[in-house]
Amino acid sequence: MTFKMVHENYNVQDLDKSVAFYQEAFGLKEIRRNEAADGSYIIAFLSNEESTFDLELTWLKEKEGPYDLGDCEFHLAFETEDYDAAHAKHEAMGCICFENPAMGIYFVTDPDGYWLEVIPAK
Image 1 (cartoon, rainbow, N blue to C red):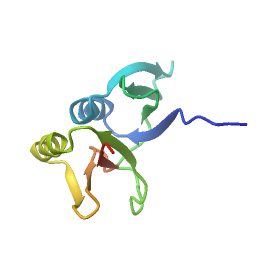
Image 2: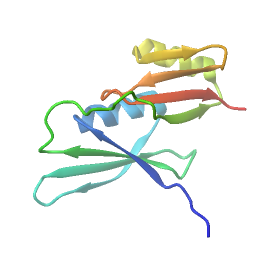
Image 3: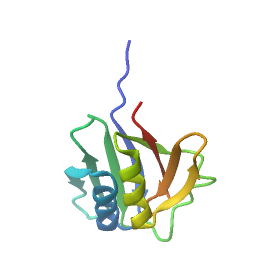
Image 4: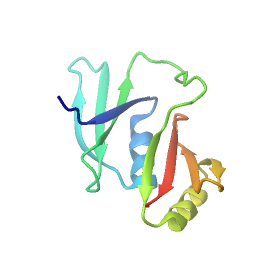
């Protein structure tokens, strides 16, 4: 028996803001959207041509206030072939939250506070 990772979900407060962030920061585009008939939720799936893995962003109408992300000890990682250009882009966006030069990685935060790791291609 084998398993293939398909997507990861993040719940977000402002779906349009989050979709725009992921498009600007990582080149992800919305590939499909599911909306509840009663308007209680909207789910947007984002991806790019580099992978078949999707990021699922879920907006819930009834949710008020920010999500409790705990200690933020989880993250999604993005690999880039041009680490320096990616770092410069994210620095200009003002979203870098942590750098570890010894490991050659850094993290950015999305509009809801989720941490996203950026690593150089091996």
